[in-house]
Amino acid sequence: MSINADKLKFFSFLLFTKLEGAVTSGMVHLGDQLGLYRALAVAPHPLTTSQLAAATGLQERWVREWAYNQAAAKLICVTSQSSQPPHLDDDTFFLSPEQVAVLADESHPAFGMGMFHRLPQTMESLKRMPESFRTGVGFNYDSHGPDGAVGIERSFEPWNNANLIPVVLPAVGVVDTLRTGANVADVGCGAGGAVLRMAKEFPKSNIVGYDISKYALARANERLSAAGLANARFADPQVEPLPADHSLHFVCTFDCIHDMTHPLAVMKAIRASLRDDGVWLLVDIKAHDTFAMNTEKNPMASLMYGISVLSCMSSALSTPDGAGLGTLGLSEMTAESMARTAGFTRFERLDVEHSVNAFYAIRP
Image 1 (tube, one colour):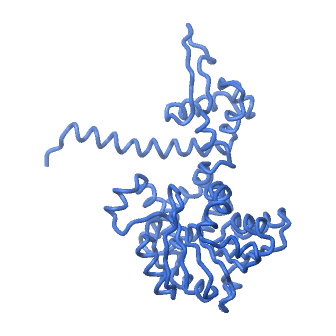
Image 2 (image 1 turned 30 degrees about the vertical axis):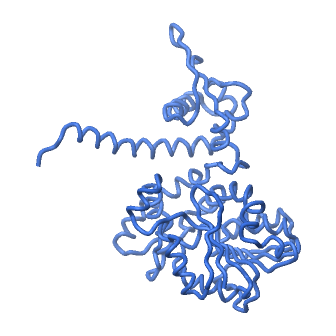
Image 3 (image 1 turned 90 degrees about the vertical axis):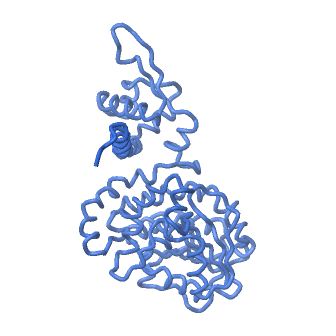
């Protein structure tokens, strides 16, 4: 078999672009953890690496190499001037408004540091993956430790904080019910952001967050204590299952059904918990029914399939009989079919714009 020299060069380049992305992702993690992005964001003018090091209490030589990586990757901005001989202060670094939003402003819906926060824990999973590939059994989210829970919190809450109350809940049609006073469950609540946001906004409603992660529940209860809300609490469904008496007005699941070992059983439990006039808000990753459609319509498909191996599918296969849906495993057709099998009769895709997620209102 002959090798085309040009194709060989191109493929080698393609391969090492993947390694560049992985290494630069590590530098993004450091920029977030060490406060380098935040220091650039609040600086009144572009900073030299000496000034950036002084602002963060770090060593200049290390900061300089980090800054050159980030500027070469076009993640931060650089202004260069030439002096003879070259001088350390020739290059100054700053963030554009868009870069501030994504890299440094935790209140902005586009804030993107959550996945990078837990990058070391995610990549640590590589050491466990050979065992999973051989046995078929994965590892749940607590295998990522406390920082795994915080990373999920930082990934999803900026957008939810900005959009859950004014956009998503009105689209579902539950605002009046929540204002009047409703029984609500957030299944797979993680660190509890949605529970706390709804409990504060709707003081007449009682809201319970359920999660099986001990780290997520610990973080949620810590935040609940700080918030001082009397109408919210958190529970482990393995100890306290969802009520099966059709007493809930509203159930929500955010980005978690595809991670579950037994998603259909959870859907059936949600149906048993809901009143006949209740509604389930299902929020999950936008996915399609075939690999070809996922790769055609999702420019991040390779990332999502990889994250699935290291995290989502691993969680969904963390018991020997796990369903193993994975990150792109819950397409709209699959979700509707499973919901109807669980006893729901009405399935509606909501007109909520999100770069990653699809939103569904599902009713008995």
